[in-house]
Length: 91
Image 1: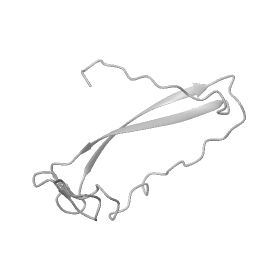
Image 2: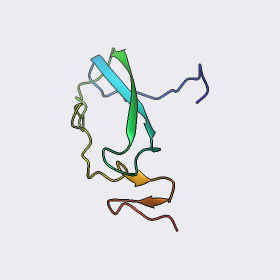
Image 3: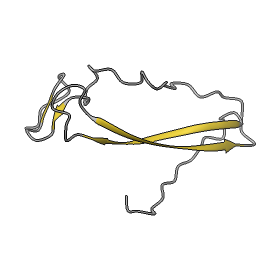
């Protein structure tokens, strides 16, 4: 994304009204060849949903704790193209 760029997304109308924290991240793989692996650069923004429905979001995560060392992609040798933890191999 270019500096000053924007991203748009649609919040489902069924989501209950209230304040929500949206988290996005850039994941750097340059040091991911060994644990602790990938480096996470998170960004957050808060939004207020009004006039929403009654559905509470599911599948939410907490930080710390959202990722485990054994999750695919946490360790990867980006220079050799071989994913560790059995995720996949570049042919």
